[in-house]
Image (cartoon, rainbow, N blue to C red):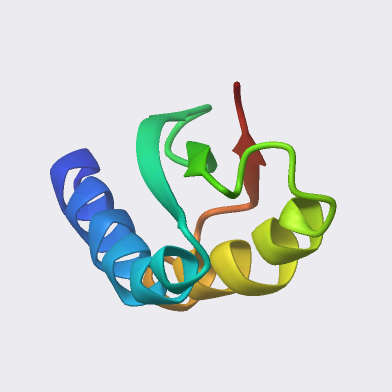
Length: 80
């Protein structure tokens, strides 16, 4: 899988989870993909910023969804 394909698949994963975040007044955007395409950096926006459950959302929802679309991703982190 090329870097461009990985990026497209990560965007598909974010598009899949975005409606759930938007229903709570939040959103998410891709910041970058690093470490030989194994680390995804995302930024939570809106109501997701400072939310006490955002780390749980990141792990259980976002990371799981991204890994479903791009199995070689090892880690997803949120940046401010």
